[in-house]
Length: 255
Image 1 (spheres, rainbow, N blue to C red):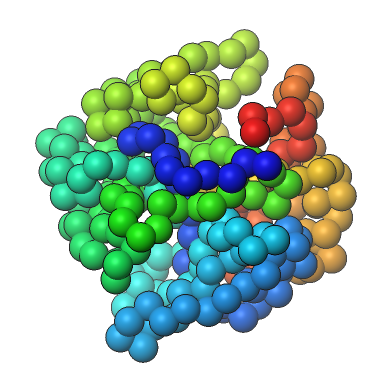
Image 2 (cartoon, rainbow, N blue to C red):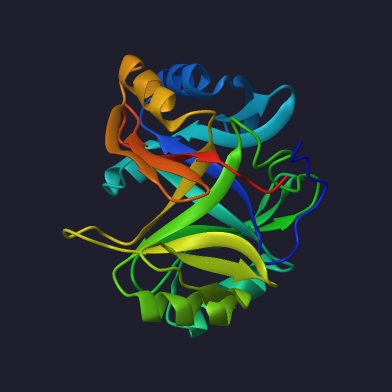
């Protein structure tokens, strides 16, 4: 199984969902991926839901506060990258032309994070772990397996993230540009099409992309892209009932 006890700096380690209806989101994703959910006190009366698979924490979700809704932010998944120092990462992102949406702050005793935006508009977070490393389990069926950036400027995205995290990229004919962290596949870049904005989306492993999309429909979500054969597996895209976009993958995956 893809159990983890730590993540190297520059590696994606967590995703969470900001949604307008946490109860409905729980029903959708537990029905789709088989997760169990556990509400936790996030301080100040806020609730943060941990999503578990066979006891292992795989991601989180929370209901968007009114202040966030008032800004017009739609339901979305946020991807987190492990760093040694969240404050230093935020300062570096700003120096590279990015925007610090929320400067580094403590998340109880779990860790320290900052919310950032790249120069093309994609929002992501950095995570400095303390009590929580991020996800306990990745890559297995029902778990996060990839983080994908849709960007309006591939060259600018390469420059920004390479400067921030030291990532390199490797292209593939007719496919996405793979993101490498210290030589290991860590994500993917896609060129935005048809007026798409720049954004990060998570990809979760499933046994079958066809069956996953059938469940999406049955649970009130919307399939966006039918399964595409990418050689070592297939990938498909969907939107949950509140509007957050994600992808699913079935095929060969690293443990």
